[in-house]
Image (cartoon, rainbow, N blue to C red; front, side, top):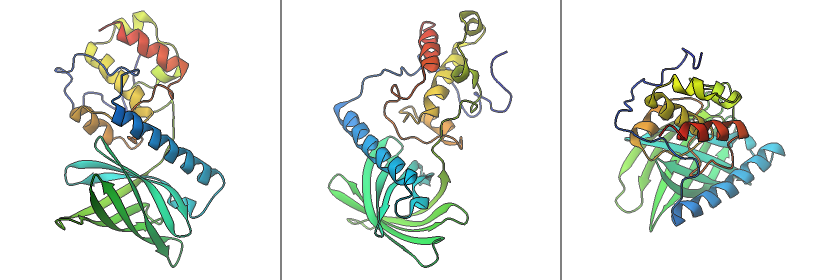
Length: 243
């Protein structure tokens, strides 16, 4: 029997208007392709610093939450000499940042960063706590000084085949007869869940909303075809034949 009872694919989500699942080999715009290359550089930097425990490596990773009505994935990918770098995904938009930090106890950190948004700059004044793994503070723009509060929680970068409502689609090859037992709504959800495990940035608002509530989801890739396992690719290709 496919699926499990721990998570419901229908929770807060209506698939009726979505006819086709997301294709993992979808074309990227030139801009998003450039963003993906930048993200790859940042993530290579993060994995290197984590592996060799460079700088204050405990700060590295994704801090996730909402600012106003936008989901924010705040990714610290480098710390060195009280300087930090990284990138922010705001719903579907990529922006890099850089800034400074200090600490008196190696547990609580004060952070100030600038985020480059086209021709505008945005300032973040933040407090990061390794005690409760949160970031809080305020952000404001340099041009009109509008201010928003920030509350983010740490999410860990990890790929786990046991996650999700239909983990078996990442664990083994699914037969055609098994797929025939599922509705198209379920097949759409399964496709999205597989891609979400690898951090795909969803452009559909409802899809983004449901997976943003999953503690294991970190939106950080415009394309994930290079991250999918052979089993996942074969299962996805088989699902696509139903549409």
